[in-house]
Amino acid sequence: GENVEQHPSTLSVQEGDSAVIKCTYSDSASNYFPWYKQELGKRPQLIIDIRSNVGEKKDQRIAVTLNKTAKHFSLHITETQPEDSAVYFCAKNSGGSNYKLTFGKGTLLTVNP
Amino acid sequence: EPEVTQTPSHQVTQMGQEVILRCVPISNHLYFYWYRQILGQKVEFLVSFYNNEISEKSEIFDDQFSVERPDGSNFTLKIRSTKLEDSAMYFCASTREGELFFGEGSRLTVL
Image (cartoon, rainbow over all chains, first blue to last red; front, side):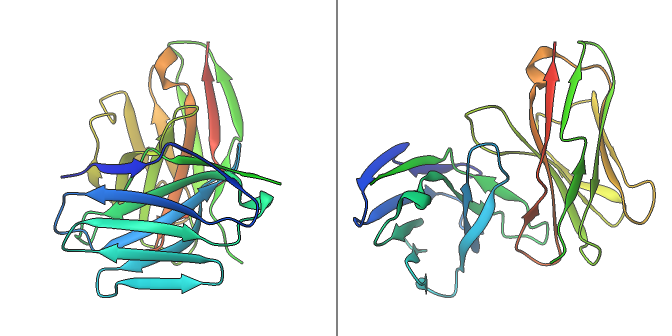
């Protein structure tokens, strides 16, 4: 119940195209789903998150969708730019008060100019 | 903007030596964590700490690892006898009620 499956592991797009990364989980208690961006040698940084009481959240070019019934959530980046190139990690909590996060294996996004 | 700070940024040590990694979480946060990231791999949970005690730990967090909050600001991770496979980036994180804030990380290299 702890694992998060993330796909694809690598994604290469042309500047201006959209990128979609998907994650699935099995723990029904999870109710918080953040996405982190990690540039080479840097810390993971939160870019967007969603809680289980909503199905979609958008922040400028970034959006996240959640299907709690099917237990999957996705990150959508529109109008990609070279500076979007990084490793993106999905994560989920365990549903309790611990706030511990379990991370997916990451997606290396490359945006080609 | 407040942030989690970690020291040292990089430590090189010999196998079998003890290492202490230090973290100062954000001051009004209540939950503290250590995560590990082996180069090129995912971020793995090690331990969570709340109300001055460990609230959860992973299988990775064996008897060689310990955590401590010696005063009101610092949160430390000790590895008693380092192994080659302990080489990784160690991230401290803290939260008040959900969003996890990560420190810049401490890169540990065990030779």
